[in-house]
Image (cartoon, rainbow, N blue to C red; front, side, top):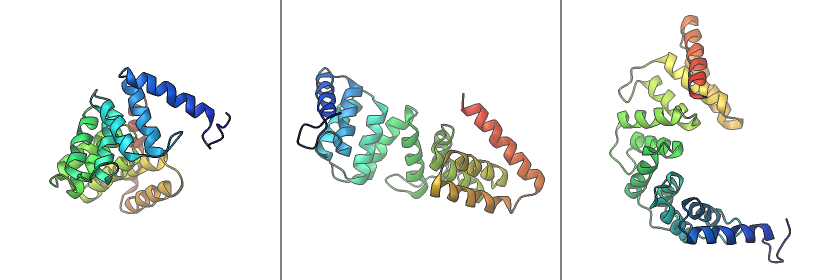
Length: 211
C-alpha cells in the first residue's frame, strides 16, 4: 500500500473509486460500504451527512446493516437531527431482518422507554433474539431481566447465571470482568445443584446456537 502524497493510501483511493462505480449501479453493499467509509473517515474525509446519504440509499433496498446504521444516525444525531423515534423505526426494520445490534438496541430502548413506550416484555423479546446470536450486551441485559424477574419472565437465578456466563465466555477485558462479576453475584445466591444446572444450560445454549 502506498500513499498519494495527501495522506490517503492509493489502495483506499482505488477502493473508493470502484465502490462509487458499483454504487452508481445501485449495488446495496457498495452503497452501505461507502457509508461506512464516510462514517469512519477511512480513505475519505469523515462526513456524517454523506455517510447518512449512502446508508439511506442502501437501506431503501432493504440492506439490514444500513438500516441499523441509519438508526444509529438518528439515535446520536450524526448527519441528521437527533430523533429517537425515527431511530427506533430504522432499528426495527433491521431487527426484523435479524440484525443483532439493532435487536439489542431496540431492547435497550424498550427497557428504558427511550424513543418508544417503556415495555419490559418487548425488551426481553429483543434481548433474547440478539442473545441467541451471541450478542454480549443482550446476553448481559437478558441476565438482568431474569435476575430481577422483569419483562414477563420469573425471577430465575439459573437463567440469569446462564446468560452472564455466556456473555463472559464471549467477551474480553473489562467487558468480561463485568460479566464475570455479575455471574459470581448470582452464583453466591444459588445452591450447588442450581449452579450445575445453569452451567449445563450454558453448554447446551452454546451448542444449539453455534451451528
